[in-house]
Length: 126
Ligand SMILES: [Zn+2]
Ligand SMILES: [Zn+2]
Image (cartoon, rainbow, N blue to C red):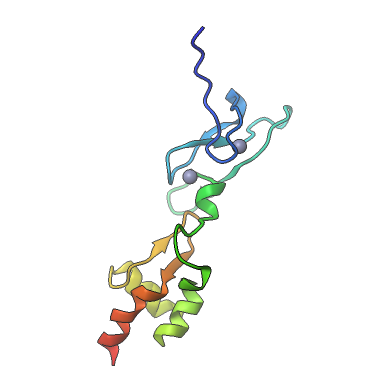
């Protein structure tokens, strides 16, 4: 028997048919209980994208990103980064979307910036 049961990318436990879902961000499988009448755990979320009226799946790993290196002090959310750059949050988000500032947009729609990435941006402003 070569049953290749897949395991959850978040908690590493075995997945069953009714608890298996795939993250749209990283493409890995995770627990998402899709049966109210059966026990199951959730290691991520699913929601409706209002723009495309499509279901979006995201695992907890992508919803709660952990910075790979450096301290948490170097990772800024939109509000903190805007304060550092002396911009409004809207202006900084627009600059990030336009590719002028390196950033990370999480599956949950949260902008994250690295403090060091804002330095060249600041020099350009004077
Ligand atoms: Zn899991
Ligand atoms: Zn994921």
